[in-house]
Image (tube, rainbow, N blue to C red; front, side):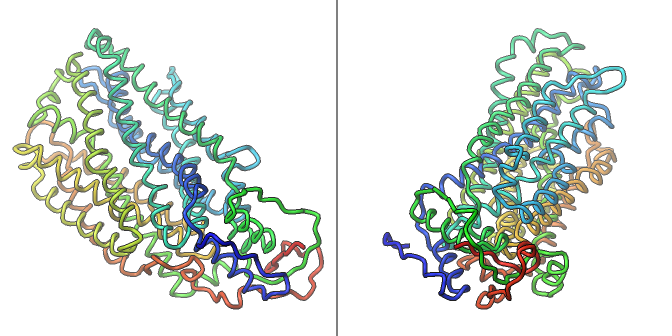
Length: 564
């Protein structure tokens, strides 16, 4: 947008023209410090989410040495399953319900209110309390520590689940059309730095306790207990930082305009947004004039998504996320096993018999797993996000998602059919393929499945629909962690530590990646279009003057409030 600012037309101007004028100012706004602030405030939530994801993956190995079988240094079958069920973006179960709940509430009461809410960022408070609860967990005769950790991670997962729809719609509704993809990608790419931070903290903590770990006896690794508690507990620090800065984000003009039905306040907010004065003030006692506009109701929701063109988009976006997360989180379950093989030598000789619990081997395992996760973050996760960032508004969302699913299909086929030969004779090649899979997950569907649902639906359902799509992904993560846990217990009779049927699991991943290619073909391309163009609604007759409804009907169906 040019530096000269055009005043909004007077109230007598047509309603839809005034609305369109305000939205075009947002869509054409020059990139500013406000966009950076939105990106940072929304992104720090994803940083926190990813930290918890990778922290529990490494912490689970530490828990095995402290609370697992003293002869093997591993958690029992039920304990291991319980911890694995809490991997992913915190607890997939809590996250599943959090995405649905907060997605719906953000459309009901507003993006800002759910970001800061009456309890001052309820969603972030849940994350902080859940994180601290894990770090101070204990056990007793009636409660195991694994059970207590699972409880806290389910609670934390509810808070983290709310971050997906809230951050997606806030970043999309404030972004200019030409940079919307990059802004949303930058928000989501914060996950890569969260992954890296968890791995680096793990390396530092293990190195700091090196002498103590080596001095522990083979049947009492008490200093490893300090390591996992510090690793998990530090995850509340970025959450506390985000809690403060989220108080500074205003409500999005699109929500104020299309859901609160307050056109004048929305245009005033756009005015302040463009001028960067950031006062966002409107007189609550000013007189009102009512006009009609679509309002979110159960009937309207069913009517909108009963149309084939809308139902097709919701299904395709939800299934694509579902298919991706089956592999994304299912592969994450096996990272510690793979990294132990790669970083502890061909065949993973340190994993055999009771040698694994010797103090020097405990240190090597923890150091190797932590270092391996640093390598995965730097070599695969972070580059994938930022390659997507540079091309998302040039190539488009759909081509990147197709490329990602296609490449993952090929990579998982190779890893699945050549699993044992490559891992035994060329572990470096396997590590390369593993990093390549992480790269194309992020330079592909892991990024685009987050972006498209934040763009492809009307404002009044944008957060709800994004929550449905994100919850579909977590449902896929739950399936991966439950169903594939059974497959991993089926031995293939090919030597020590070969009970994990990772080869079969990788082949199943390949099938879901292929199915993701077909679901992507059903999606529209959203690049270069305004959010209103993508919504499949008639924008020329979106709002009309009402017939003088009574004051009690201000919040009734199809009422648009203007304050003068």
